[in-house]
Length: 152
Image 1 (cartoon, rainbow, N blue to C red):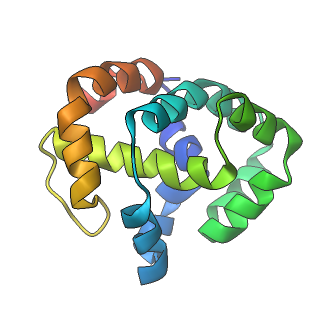
Image 2 (cartoon, one colour):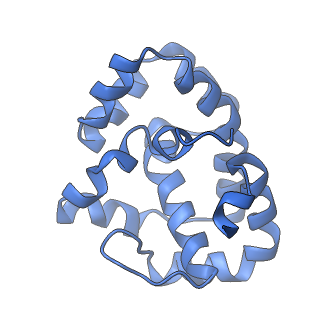
């Protein structure tokens, strides 16, 4: 899981530049997504399996996903039996995964003191949630994200 590909896998393309092309409506989706402890745990639990699955996809599929809108990524994931099986096993929808994972990641980054920017942001409620649960969530996140990379 420590490969440089993981940030791309996490969001099925957001790391390739989609965050910088985000519309105000797409940004609002992240701000409106409400994190809870059960949901954060579900997102973290799904990451290893989804990462393994997405890494197994052909490069052209990943490249195509990187160019899709968030709505297209969600729709394609909803049509993907293997991806949806992983998400359903963890009690998640495609939107939960595509929007929830980066929402959680950004909230954790900000809770650890990373400066907010146009590409790293969180709602006040999600930031407060991340700060209140950082000691519990960060070790779990690190375990699935390769951990030490964030500290470097």
